[in-house]
Image (cartoon, rainbow, N blue to C red; front, side):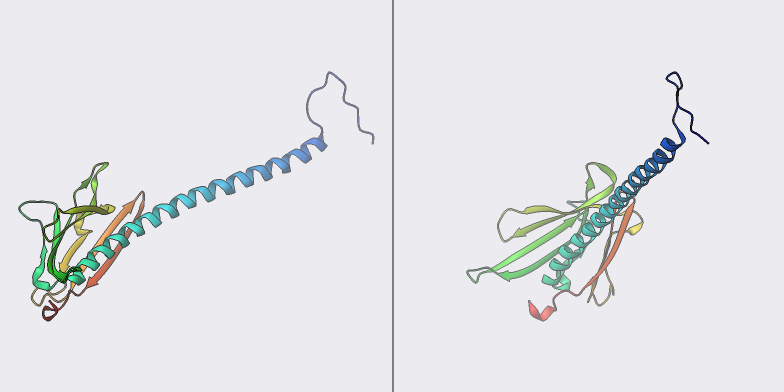
Length: 188
């Protein structure tokens, strides 16, 4: 059987052209869909890592300061001056000149400016007579339904603090729980 020649006025593709073009188009679509899937997965991974980092930063700073203080110098809950206050820690330490200095750290959970439901964790430190310094420790924290809380594990003996922090970035949520034992009373 002989192939017919295409006349100049005929339009369309030959069978051979179609058999070559269809697999090439399939390969291009496969590569594009693979790249799209990788992009979606990396976005989810980035949101997950951001949520984890926020929870870890919160746990690090609160644990660090709780270890410095004695149980009787821990105040949990809002103060009259700041309704967003979560807790405060006070301790004594020596400065480089061997003078005793009072440290006070106050943590608060005010609303983030970009979101009404999420909060940021602020740490305000006052050292002696110096002006207080404030940093934002973490953002995107959830406080609804006691998702982010600080409490004594045993309210009578007050030997250990439990800090649960929940952060949400996009659709990803991370919950971390830290248990910290403050400095014993005899180590003031």
